[in-house]
Amino acid sequence: MRIAILTALADDPDHKGRKRAFRSFAGRSILSHQLDCAIDLGCESVVCLVGGLGQDVIACQHRAEAAGVRFQAIEDLRRLSGLVKADDDVFVLADGLLPAVEEAVRLLAERPVVLTFTADPALGFGFERIDGERAWAGMLRTRGQSVERLSDLPPDAEAASALLRIALQTGIRQTPLDPALLANGDWLLRADPPTLLAREKRWIAGRVPPVSFAAPGLATAERIGSRLARDIVGTRFERIPLLAAVAAGVLAALMATLGKPLVALSLGTAMAVLLPIAGIIQRLGRVPRNRTKRFGVDTTLRAGADLLLISLIALTIPIEGPAWLRLFVPAILFGLLRLGEQLTLDPDAPGSSVSLRALYADRIVLLALLLPAAFFGIVQLACAVLSLLVLGSLFVRDAGVRGLTAD
Image (cartoon, rainbow, N blue to C red; front, side, top):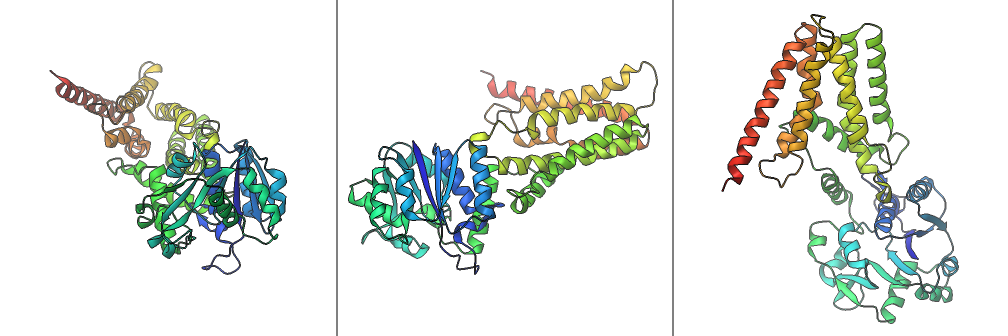
């Protein structure tokens, strides 16, 4: 079994009365991000040494349970030996460490190892010295039999440091990390608030690459979502944008049945603004082992929103000729936009364009054009013109691809 040992006992020097592991990072505690790292490492159980059960610890317990991982909070170091067997694989993270998860998983996934940095400059970043040349990077993998030796130590001993010494005594190999991880702020232990904030912005940008302002509506909404995520991810308010988007859609459908198509389309526009905000928050708060099990804003709900918008736009078209014609024109427009997204889905494919794909997906800009047209009674014409423009862009792209791939 793979077991992670975390610690949340060290005080935060920048905030009196708070523990370093409970500092906020991207809307959740650093301890919660350490839990995600343990999940990515394939741990089936997580043991956390804490001074008491606070809200942050309870939030980690719920997050672990959502990923199918057992989470145990203990206060006595001596209890560790009873929770770990000799043949278990044990991963240790230092108190308050915020590592580069991908690099940690790559180096720790295969065999026991102690991760290190060159002592200079690691000591200046708060890392623990191993010898004259090296400092511990705050993560290691060892065997469960090492944990049994903790029972010989006093109950107030620092678990991570003790396990480091035991691992070194047993001859576990040391692997040096790239010092650039420290210089770039991608591997933090005792970072000051500005450094932590800078790392947070890079982490969010890495998880959710910013959309180009070639799609201004989507770019603005996603940036709002990224900023909002820092305040509400991991809290009871995390689902509010998603619930608000669903509520706007339901109200739009209700207004449509009551014969108020313009009001309904306005509410549909509000839904289109809220959906990308909710999608960003959901992606940033998603549990690693549970990535595909939650309700997908980017798939199911977005497809349903498009169907609703087609119906709402159709209701604003004056009845002239067959009733099916009201649905036909907006359906063609949305179908072409969807086709454009699919054709530009692979960023490495010839002729693909991330900016163009974002523009095809930007329902906010689309509705900003169609809502005034609906007010003046020319939405059918607007849909037809936009359909021709999208169709033309697809032909231009296809011609470009043929030119790029011609022998």
